[in-house]
Length: 296
Image (cartoon, rainbow, N blue to C red):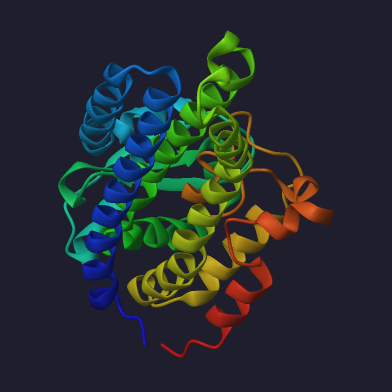
């Protein structure tokens, strides 16, 4: 059975596995491109790019995520009550006080990011602060602090940068196959074009699968950990009902960062039909049901 402590260790290994997978994919793409164009410098460039992206995603991916979300530091004077809630829960969880960011958006939602507990950020939308009562806010904040305590934040933040880079480079490589002139006449050009097409088709699918794999079970564990922290599961359950019922998406909603949020950032209207097959979060009904069965 998964616990906070087993997941902490697993998330460290998952992060290193993701770094290794990214390195392998980029080098593979670089090898195909260098062979296709007969230029070994492309392979060397791919290796250097992969190393730089791994390094950059570790140190700066949280800043990239905050920029993509349109988040700004929350002014202490305007958000003193939020600061007190976060501080009290962080003390209870045995965590350093994270930075608090505000996303000016009427859609209620939240996420946590950062490379470790000492460099963590909790981002809340203005809609969340306005629409939720105190116990509901405590439930959401406790959920996000649980992601920090469970060491989810580095893994989920790195995914945004690395998976996005793989998809972009795969697309560039495939476009070069079609529009790169007469290089396709080289020996082996035919099967390399097939490989490029396969990579183009599979890259967004692989990205989605990675997001699904790291997100769904993680949300259940963070829900349970957050409920234990507040000792009131109904607070988080009620917050999830309100967040999931809001019809409109976040202004900066993106498939690249969707898995970071406590609930889908695409709103209730965006979770219909085929979109449900690619949800980065477990169904809200299942999460609420699990919380309702907790006895604290």
